[in-house]
Length: 180
Image (cartoon, rainbow, N blue to C red; front, side, top):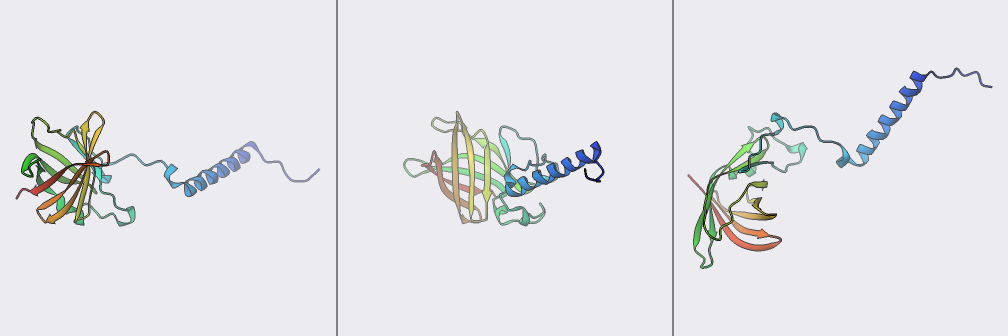
C-alpha cells in the first residue's frame, strides 16, 4: 500500500476539465476550420440582408484588414454603375443601374433599376463581391438555382468590361460604366 493521499472528487473533475480543455485546444490548433465563428456584430460588417441587397465581405486576410475609413484598392467600384450587355449584333443594351457601397470591410450592391424585357434575366441579389482595383468579380442569383458569375476588368477608372458565365460557360459580355 502507498502512502499517497487519495484525491477528492473535486480534484479529479478539475484534472479532467484541464485535460479536456487541452485536447479541444489541440484539435482547434490542428484543424482551425473547426473552430466556431463568433456571431456577426455591427463592427464586423453585419447588416440585414434584403432580397435586392446582399452584403458580402471583401476577401482580405485578417492580418491586413484595414479600418472601414481607410481606402482599399477595391474601393474604385464604389458609386453608381450602369450595366450594359453586348447584344447579338454587338450593340450595347442597358440592363440595370446599381449602387455599390462599402459596409464594414465588404461591399453591398443594391439594384436601383432593373430592365424588364423578354430574354432579360433580372438579378434577385448579388453576392461574393471581390475587387482589387483592376478586377471586379461577383455572383448574381438569377433564380431557380441559376447563378451568373461576372468577371470584369478595369478599362478606365469609370469603366469595367468582362464576361458573364453560367455553369462555367460564357453566356454574355458586359460593360459597367460609372455614373458621374
